[in-house]
Image 1 (spheres, rainbow, N blue to C red):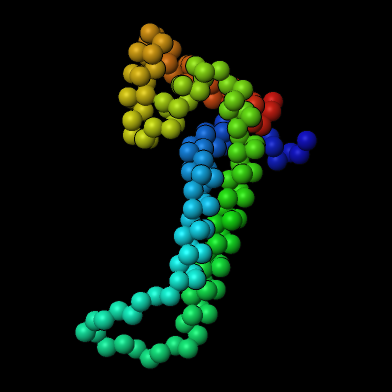
Image 2: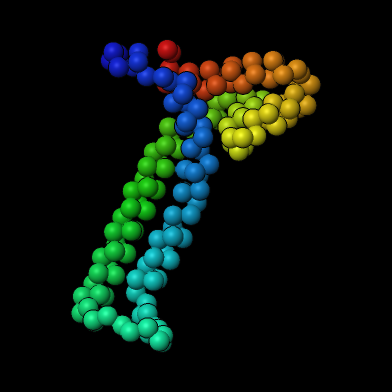
Length: 154
């Protein structure tokens, strides 16, 4: 084991990974649509715009520039999708291993808006019929379990 692992804040890393889950899921669900839209725009001919504004000089390479920009954007989207798949292959098994109660607690604390943590505590208290300190303890245990599943023993 590398000495570097001793200095990594695994708990914070697990929380950050948890916060990224919805973004990664969105990327996987919508990247194909975004690439198709870019591809459609890439091969379509743009209409001339009639305005009162004077036009600059004509650029004979404008079509090529538009195509290369679209290809670059598609490459970025594919790389982003590749990273999202890699993330999901790493994170999803750990997430699926958690109990329903642990997932509920983590969803309330970390998938809701950041400024609504108080609401998350009250939701957890109502859901489990517990007091606030027990809700925070439940959250801490769930985060520790997720950290263990993602990074192994500390």
